[in-house]
Image 1 (cartoon, rainbow, N blue to C red):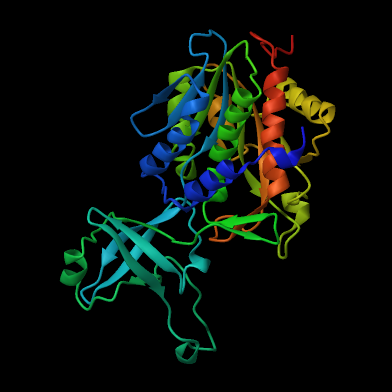
Image 2 (cartoon, rainbow, N blue to C red):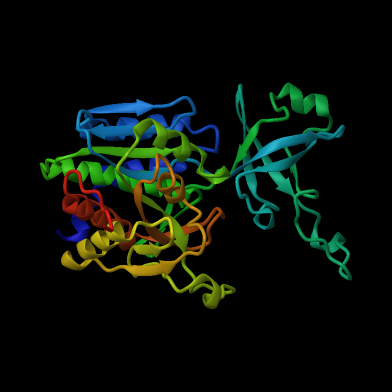
Length: 361
């Protein structure tokens, strides 16, 4: 199957719309609705839960259940304190990077709609050059053009409003996708494309397939923890992003070596079930899909951990998409890697036998 046939125009149109839509942790519903609308022709039914995780199901009556999973949420900020002179201080919602905030434009989400703002920062001329202050959580502030706290509140902004960046999708040099929130709405996109490929190629699976877009990963894998107890799967293949470690200021001796354009990354970790991982590697080799390897220590830091250690143990594996500049507004991935992650999940599903226990014994 040629790579160039995987992502068609409607796929890419959906990807751009889906990435551009804000989906902060705890407020993923609008993005989930877009995702479900795109997935609807390719699944039999949907499951949703109290906190907004969405699952498209193929063969819902099958006893043996296989999950393919990404997470829907993006990092963001909360309004934490409003000063008397109308400036807004923030706290994190997920792992938002304080160092990239100064001079960024922001969207503050209110019941009345979006309020525009900026992260202000003192001019270089005015800063103490002997001991220059760096951005940190207690000196970052947002300016929405108001002089008084009452004016801010009149615009609908209050403590607890969530804040996102407006940066949108673009393509660099023909094959590099750039946007905020590629971590990990690209995962939701890729699992949806797997469902589309199964439908378009008229593949009939012998088991139930649960295409799962979990919420609240960025604050501790919480959506996956909830939905795995609802689905009670036998197998879970998770996709998330990992670091391209070939860019400046990253220590390969600590982070390993993975690079965009070199293929999906297959993880070795205690949470990864070895027989399932071997099946994925065999699928890659059989179908000439390039891949890279990565070792994690105690945890993968992804929803793989939540699935693996649930329900008495679920055979789980992680296929990652290498990404540059994680948790910034210019996250970058290679189109070929996106296509190859989709291919690898698709081909791995076709290798899974009904009621395979993946037992070591």
